[in-house]
Amino acid sequence: MEILEEQHSGVSVFKVKGRLDSKTSPEFEQTIVKALKDGSQQMVFDFKDMDYISSAGLRVILKATKDMKRSNGLIILCGMQDYVKEIFEIAGFDTFLSITETFDDALKKF
Amino acid sequence: MNTAKLSLVLKNDLTELENLGYHIQKFCKLHGLSKKNTFELNLALDEVFTNIVSYGLDNQKEQLIKIDVQIMSKNVTIRIEDHGKPFDPTAIGKSNLHCSLEDRQIGGLGLHLINHIMSSLIYKRTGDKNVLILTKKLDEK
Image (cartoon, each protein chain N blue to C red):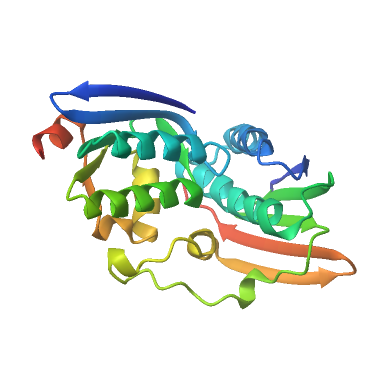
């Protein structure tokens, strides 16, 4: 897994490439925790190049969303492949997460 | 009737997940499975494997987990064997996934995904082994 961090006019963007599983998700979690600590209140998780996610990855996203909600911030997820999106739906995550098709749509949400 | 089989023996280490993913993808591609089915099989195996490594085994000792995947016509059967503590995933209650974000518990999700993706789960304790058999009907391409 690779995480590419970018800033787009005040929005912290995290592009995840590869696999988000129980082995790799702690690194993603640490990256998000650090960004939250540094005061980031607007985040986009770009999953266009993420080809795999397990419940361990979903858990990190759930935790990040809870933490962000507490500080009145916002996380938008975008670019997911259809089969990845389906896992979010099976998990029931689509009911409380903001998900957009494209990266540009995600940025428009702020 | 077409039959294809993949057998893997993995160490009780999460670094094996990438290895598992690699072999499943290669096997599924070779036998013409859809991207969605490939992902689902990888996910079901990952969740079971991660559970065994994280909770079922003494991580200090190297132990082996045996995985067999068999595709017969449009059905896939996965068999996973480990020597860990007895653990029957079919006896665990369904998690409540329809509560609000605040009430949502972190955990229990892996099993929920497996139950959703696979058609059936059968658990047996045979001697000192946990044997889990998962089946699924594959999508038509």
